[in-house]
Image (tube, rainbow, N blue to C red; front, side):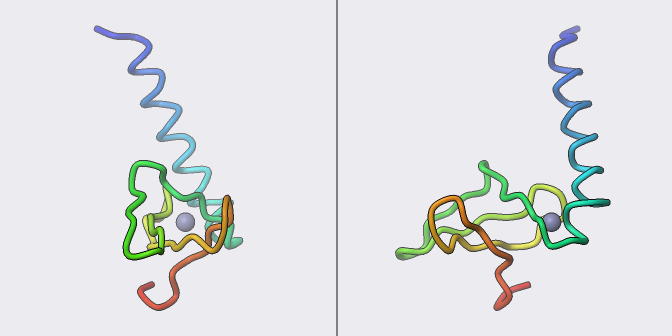
Length: 69
Ligand SMILES: [Zn+2]
């Protein structure tokens, strides 16, 4: 068994819970780096916690995609 893997998984679950309880309700969504897609000249992704679609406004500045949310 891989203890480090279990620890990482556990931390990710905690981070998700924390995000859903405290970040997302306040509009502070964190985009998932593994869900980034490029469509035309627009980058889209999802919130790591609540999975709502997000769009990139500028570098390091992401917002919920209200057209699709
Ligand atoms: Zn969210």
